[in-house]
Amino acid sequence: MKLNTSGIIGQSTTLADVFKMLAKVAPTDSTVLVTGESGTGKELLVRALHDNSRRADKPFVPINCGAIPKELLESELFGHEKGAFTNALRSRAGRFELADGGTIFLDEIGEMDLSLQVKILRVLQEREIERVGGGASKEVDVRIVAATNRDLEAEVAAGRFREDLFYRLNVIPLHLPPLRERGGDVLLLSRFFLDRFCLKKERPPLTLDPQVRSVFMAYPWPGNVRELENLMERLSILVDGDVVHIDDLPAKILTQVGDISLLPESPMPEPEVLPEACEVAAPPASGEDGSSAGRREPPSPTPSATAGDMPVAAAGQGGFLWPTLQTMNENGGNLKDFLDAVELRLINEALQRADGVKNQAAELLGIKRTTLIEKLKKKGV
Picture 1 (cartoon, rainbow, N blue to C red):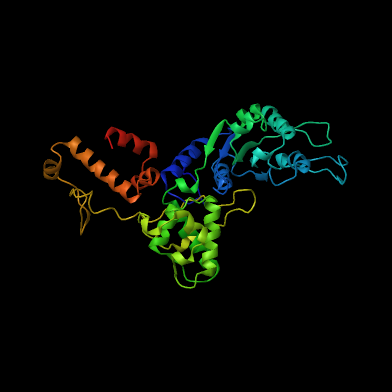
Picture 2: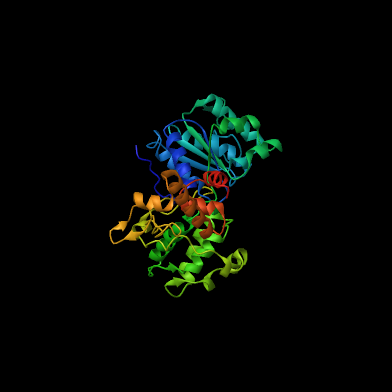
């Protein structure tokens, strides 16, 4: 079955690894703990998990454990009986009952009070809940998915999170990488958000100046996708022309990246404006992570004409020109040496374009950072 990642934009290798794990985990009923910094789009990932599960036609019920006072959170989760507390004028089902048969998403579970953590542990162990003020237990068939931007192992060590609950939740860990580790995805997301906001404001699409693209690739995006989305909305309102220039960017970003003249050129061209990208539904407003982590297939960057000065990737009128045995004999002598030479040329070019930043170089090569490091070690670079 094809994985449904609608609303998730990106083609980085780090995100591809997340999708591979998602495809394996989604069809099961295993408990999943999604971790990642604030603003990375954890709720979108959890929705994709539900949409690709056997429970996709059943309820998906999110609740932000950090947004509801702890005095009310128990009632929100488990419901209450009439007269259980002041103003409890009638019985009310909680989120676990509403999610029966489907998925409940406990967002920011690291903010939950220890006394409530015990009750969540019971649900995981016994698959039953008890309403506030009630005397009877009720069985529930729910898949529990939790998310947090905290280091729960550190929270356990500090006594702020139950160790037994952590291990119950952490059956399948899914980590959503921060935007700074997703390479060229920042440009794809920029294009997507600009297209969407320009369409919404009925103005011609904006494009990014090459210097702006270089700045976006160098900026660490501490607020992740949410920060990028907010900036694109601001630019769609404030930029007068059709191109976003350096002067249009906030001083905070320019100060953070330093001397713009020293930044490497953006390794990706300006993505093509694709109107259909603007038709993707806006990220959900509920939950902590309403950002688009997203996936839209963009046009592939044009490959380099040569691998350094070795004539093995020349592009002619008909497209890519494959090397011949003569090329190999002239440049390598044998297949292994020739391929090693080509690989080293491409690695060096990627490192040069990425200004020595291995994460970005690995993205350009379409490999993992660990794979790149291993290749560098073998080649003595």
